[in-house]
Image (cartoon, rainbow, N blue to C red; front, top):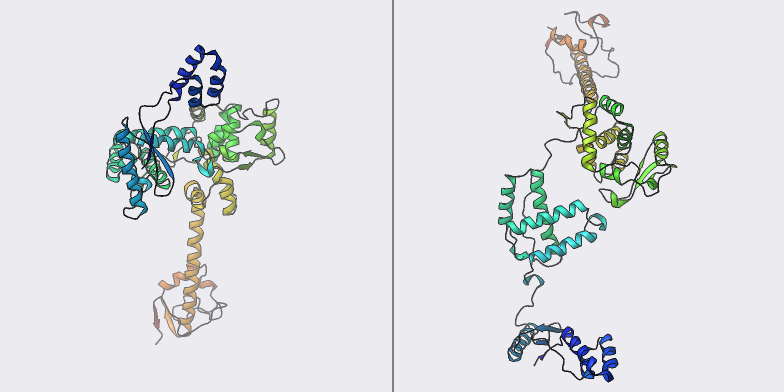
Length: 474
């Protein structure tokens, strides 16, 4: 038979003991000492008062794993004893193999409290490489999960299912941009995955949730060399320094704002940054020129080591200032290539590294990318002049190959006694040879370079294929 008992209400019993101790000075010291030691029942006995018990009975039992468990019953001792007996029989059936053992996900979990646990995990070490989530990411994740809880009327975690989530995403698509819809979907999907790893769910209900198109309508474009020159010429000295540091390091706006005076390395020279401030959560160290390092050293002179190095204002104020500088420099923000923003400085930096001829590993390291696809497909932009030159070089090489092949075939044809037509003579013109320079023109047409020895390194063969029109000399 399971043990049924009542627990002492410590708060009510303590107040009762203190009142009694005031009326009995002889036992006051002993009773108060026992209360300070946390022995409420003994203090009540010393003060000569009856302890105050909680109205609900509790019971203990041994579960199927052999561990002692305690549960709360009802205010009736008899009902609690029946409940305890049913639980004892249930545990015996599991131990004897009559019924399967309960699984962790069989117990419904409250959605709101589980979301709070998830957010607490993220705020502690839920980010990349064990770092905490960024403040903005935490705020957005909390807002998205609150919206899903209200939209789907979620009471427990087990209420999440794929059809209702897909329907919610479809409604969002009519109101918000693709990137925002993807963020909402990613929040609830990541939450479900987290629940699976903690066995709150047996399987991920959103495993089949498809991806959403979230490419930006206006990609960040690189500034031209002329635009960079104009921008640095019109920008105030303070902002010009921000832009030059961004152009020489590729640091993002948030990362530049996190730079402290102690981050300036004059021996490198370089600008290191701790992993907690970097997007990829890896320590960074971006080389800079000696001239920029000396300028930053003059700026940092007299400042505290933990003071901001660049004194950049918040994001919105920085963006407003940059747009004003764009307008002063007569730079169009929107072009067919994309939108000019502060992130354009990072695009410029990565493209400059690519054009320098650096190897792929160096490009990825300086760009702080973990994949070559991000560096070469997303950031690196083709140069129009280089594209034109490469296309012309390829066409020239191709024409030279065709001309050399045709001249070899002409040699074979002449050796076989075939007559070359005037139209085929144009192939010699393409290759840069002319009839006048031919040492042995064809006697029938007086066209073409027909000297078998004029094509060095080519061996005539009667079986060589001929792709031009030729007629046999009769």
